[in-house]
Image 1 (spheres, helix red, strand yellow):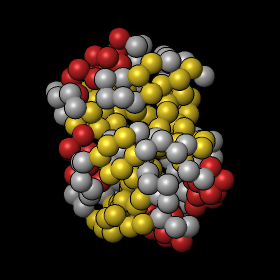
Image 2 (cartoon, helix red, strand yellow):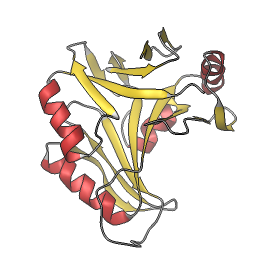
Image 3 (spheres, one colour):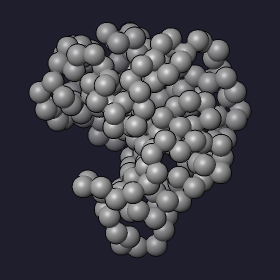
Image 4 (tube, helix red, strand yellow):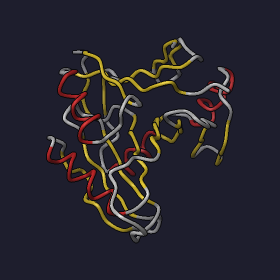
Length: 202
């Protein structure tokens, strides 16, 4: 089964970014960084969704991120689907932090259970077929709105949403130009998808 080996964020200051993702967000080697000055502005077309067990974990991680220089995009709150908020990392990456539970069921932990890389694409159906043709297996699919690929055992899961819908969920404008500032490492690479997201070989 084809899966993601790691997510590489391209940042102006790798040392600072590494401290943020490993220290403030406890992501270990699931998210890596490397230097880049590629021009970029506005929404980069993706978000990192960090899924945790309960609301207190969301609160701890958001507070840790803000203390480390992140900017609040959406304050944490309860919603129909659970509890969560959105921050923008110092390098510009949009991170959502969420728990499906609305109440704590145990002691507070800062542990991130799942990392979901959400790509905002122009045509969900076409991008889904592109990835299937490159060896990925669909786990869930809802027409032209949402696709989740089977990444069992991988350090991150991949999903596809419409770019405008993803930006709305994140609380930002969908407008953006330049580099995505992200590379996905996988045995499926190397290739570039229809929306310009780059994959490279492990």
